[in-house]
Length: 206
Length: 132
Image (cartoon, rainbow over all chains, first blue to last red; front, top):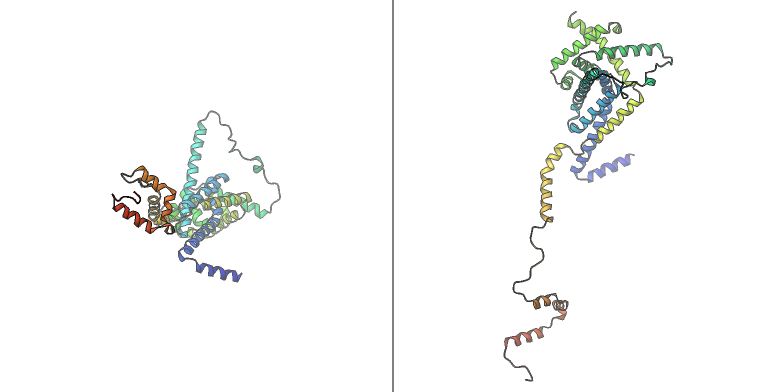
């Protein structure tokens, strides 16, 4: 293996420097982007799921955000990707929320409201799981549901600030870029979000 | 309750909520994980092959190369076949296209004495031929 590495480095030395740099930089860029997307995709999905309350919509939102980031911003420095990605994702979530509100208004005026086959819940998926679960797991699931409900009911910017700061771990400056607002606004939204959540989930905290 | 009290109290609260959210990520269904992986590959495939800055840098050179190639390849409107000289008779053309005449170009067939004699004959227009 070591001999192979030595041979590879010697071969690389023989190539013109410009070609080596171009090929390496392209491969490095692709690898860096893949690593980044693999690192954020699950948290991004949960953030979208909490915002949209729908798994399929959340997957669509994350996929759109990934595509836009790769297509438009792949050449940006990697340290800029995370705030950009979450800004794209939040825009997509808001678009979907607006579209859903419009659809609900239109459906409210329709004389006949049949169930949309695509929107109909899968009865198998909705069936309760009768398998015995440890008490701790049940309690954790209940707390998660309560937390998810409470976060989803927050105003949009508070929800975004809380999830990006607390869950994704962005700092104030990165969150400000993602939310397109000032760092001071981020702090305010985050403070209000935590206060509201504590008020709703007091027993959860204790 | 002032801001400091809230911040101190919310520290534990924030840790607990963060822990719950991270646990929920770790228990995502396999179908969701698979869809996310597919989405990632699709995004990577849609990535532009060449960085935009690089494209912009080499665009003028590429355009110049294409233009030069076009100038070389596209005919310039001139007739590539040479036109016959003005005043040339059909006999001259026939001689030029005669395959036997081409052999004169070879040095092995060149008879210098004959051409000197023929030139001398041409210079004396009224010289009677031998035997007349």
